[in-house]
Structures are given as structure tokens and as C-alpha cells.
Length: 160
Image (tube, rainbow, N blue to C red; front, side, top):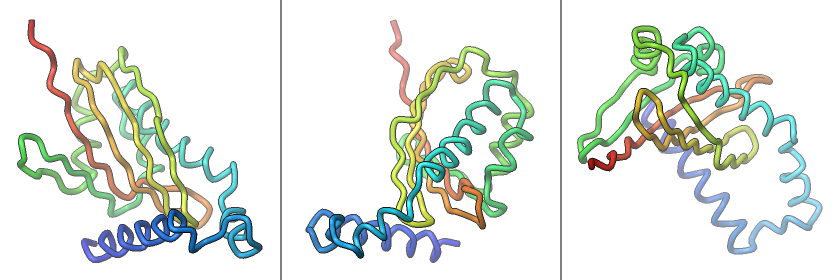
């Protein structure tokens, strides 16, 4: 799984670097073909997977999220410099064993798609009183977008 994640990140970085350097001309026939492979439907499907994540939190029910998660998905954070995490099943257990986060407010702040891979960022407030930044890697599995990796940062709260 780590090799796959490394390969994914390497290909994603190389592709965007080539676009930024102008090596992929998005106005050429080849560039247009590459850009046209990404449809509005793909963006909506990625957002649907992320909205399922948020809805699962608001309702405290992992069953809402599970269809939007790849079977071997992982989740990590680096709180205070210590990397912790593992299987996404820990998130399912958290959702099911805690009350619904009814005051949760969130926004999908970015979605970038390259072919059948995507990156997305979500900012949320009031998830059981905490503020988070979540970054997701997603993969298109058949015709469905699935969350492959979730990494998150818990923001320190201002203490008065």
C-alpha cells in the first residue's frame, strides 16, 4: 500500500509539474483530450464522496460513509509531530461510538482531478468542538470515486 501511495504521489506531482512548466499544452489536441477526460460528473462524484464523510459525522453513522471509501483506505494525522493512524475502520468506530456532530460546519475548499485520481481539502468547525483540516486522496474505482487516504490536522483551540 505504501508503494502504491508513493507512486500515486509521484505521478500526481510530475503531471502537475509538467502542466506548470508548459510541457502539457492544455490548448493542444492532446492537452484538450487530457483535460476533457475530467468531467463535471467527476467533480460532483468526488464532492459526493466527501459530503458522505461530512454527513456521516453530522449523523454519527459510519454506514453513510462506507460506500464512499476504498476497501483498504487509510487515515493518518501528525499531532504534535507524532504520526498516528492506520485503517479507516478506526474512523468508522469513532463515528459509531460518538454522538452526532450536529453543530458541524464544513466546506470543501478544493478539488483537483487528474484522470482517475483526485486530491481534495475540507475545512471543518465544531466537530465535537474541534476544528480540522482534512486532506483526501481519492481514486476512481470503476465508475465511482472512493476515498483512498485521509490525513488530518487538528487545530489548537484558542484558550481564553
